[in-house]
Image 1 (cartoon, rainbow, N blue to C red):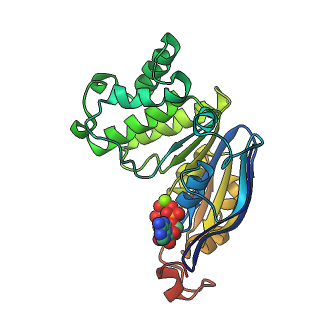
Image 2 (cartoon, rainbow, N blue to C red):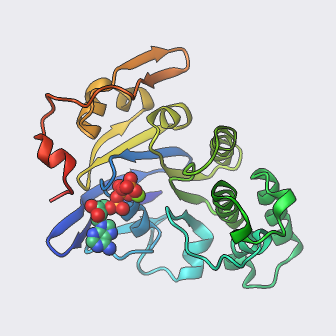
Length: 270
Ligand SMILES: Nc1ncnc2c1ncn2[C@@H]1O[C@H](COP(=O)(O)OP(=O)(O)OP(=O)(O)O)[C@@H](O)[C@H]1O
Ligand SMILES: [Mg+2]
């Protein structure tokens, strides 16, 4: 279980993650949604120890994230960041092999190679495994980073906007891969998504953040709900209930009667 207990992050006077409590038990797909600037990436970065909290504590299967040595944490939990800044001169296969580093320490075994090959095949990267990252399109590069995380083969997987830049087919394929990671490989996936319909279709649970706080947490049909979405996004979003679950018609007009004045909706938090 990932246990987030009273986590806070401040930059100067701005509190961007505000006393968040969240328990994520083993198994399943949890989507994290919320407006730009809501604090999703900051929260995920603290869970992955890429960022230090100001207050609170996070444990993963009882291990305090701040106190766990990096390689040990990296065998339990992997993180795909929203933006990746790795040397672009690397080849795809070399990048994916990085995912095995916490296990191999740099000397790749047959098992490591199996993981690398499988991850490359899963993300449709076979034909470009020898190409350098700077010779790929944005979406192909994004898939290479997802493959690296897949190769890391951790119990917990945190993905920050993995669908960013992916075309429709590769987005669907990536969500299927995420679902299979949970269903077939018993992994726990926490994924930041902007499309609430994708979140509704593929998640067991959706957590919504606003202004650094968790403001909704429940099943897809509980969270993809007109009143909840109005509160989360300050937007009136009609929701249709179909056999495939709730579908938000998110090209609705901006909410004019929400609980926040327009100025604070469009401005940065605090
Ligand atoms: N290094 C920093 N210094 C100051 N403020 C920061 C810093 N990093 C992030 N912030 C602020 O923290 C808030 C939360 O940012 P965060 O990246 O977590 O949002 P997000 O929910 O991931 O948004 P998006 O959907 O745009 O990715 C934003 O208002 C952002 O401007
Ligand atoms: Mg973000």
